[in-house]
Image (tube, rainbow, N blue to C red; front, top):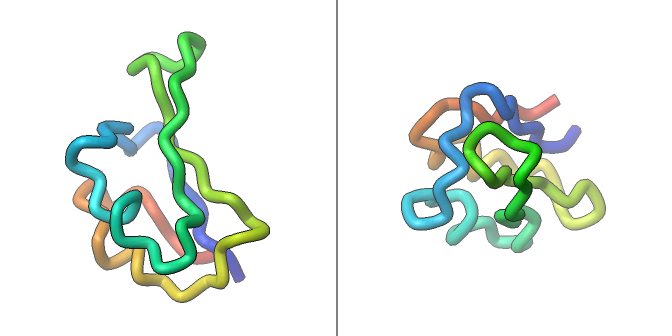
Length: 67
């Protein structure tokens, strides 16, 4: 099982994203993307994610879940 981000709920703001800063595996990254409505998106690297679930508890937008 791995973490998954529901993009339509995510504010994609690297300044306030606790999971981005506190993921022990550094599996979450912020990516500039002009095709996204907010100009950026958060991504989870499935190869780095170990499914620990810390990001789920830290996410202020409740947009990360373990699947």
